Length: 451
Image: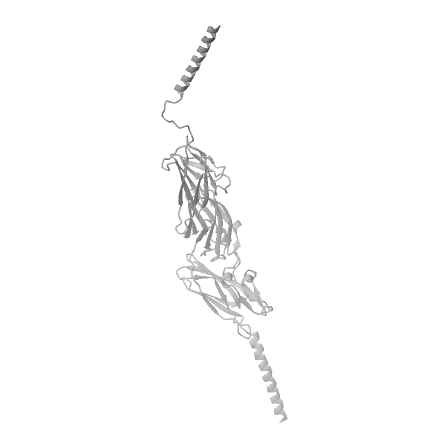
């Protein structure tokens, strides 16, 4: 009997140890790896799919570690035992340019790829093909409500964004000589053989009425890469921004946002237009354009009857009102009575004196605002109108187009003695002189007789 009690005691002890071991076994053998499947890819071409680790476990598997580039979008608790993605959209776009992906796969003729045995955490996924670009995705493999750390398989659907090209300008109603800032946004494409010398990625702008002067910034995935790009301006003004050096050898930038900013001076007096064309391996895969417009003013010089047009007047034009104005603007003559706003005061043949022809003066290349004409020379026989002439150019925001404005100025004749049509004063002057001569003669005769 004593032996049986001992056996039961041993069995009970083993049962207790086994129970504790099961718990420990569960904790130590929790799943820390899972599969991430990206579906919705096009089977018509080859896509490159990149996986970037945003948050993973530390070596002891007891705390979360957030990648530096992902920290603004992920919040940890004090003990780093839990995390919350506070901005999934921002996280999906935050992968820096040039960073090596955790893993990369190529989908050829299939609609999905799977990353196997991926450590538990959160990941950003980018995908792009030769003709199709997909929106970035975020995949979380952490099972939040499990007692112990658990990973689960995840499937995300890729959504195509195409080779979108978006071009914007900071001003659409401009003056000749004004500097306009342009921004081109597109997506870095994927390449079947990334390390091929035949690969190229370029943005070519074809401007009309503009002179592109400077590229101020180029970013890929939010990382400044301006110094890694080259530019070239052709004789016809076509401007090329070459990003081929950023292709790399593993499609690390595929699917990332490309943002190019540059400046251009308006050279035309009737508006501008330009189109940004994106080329992958010398083939255009997207484009977008912008337009800008200008204003012009025509001044007519009238006599007091408001019908007779007067010839020979000259003017200066100011930006502002008569009471509030700066220096007179400079213009370049384009035809008799027609002038375009000068690029600067030093442009060849730039002048502040504007001569009307056949009673009219037209000035072009103006932006929106108030203008005031000062008459500096009146037509012959007329006085200068000190009031001058005002005009306002207003942008048409509903139906963008060039805007034409008219104004006028009336002069009065100089004062003169009126003619009455009588015989005048000449005869009376002569009669008076004759009378005086006769009187003097009589006086001389009378004195002679007296002597």
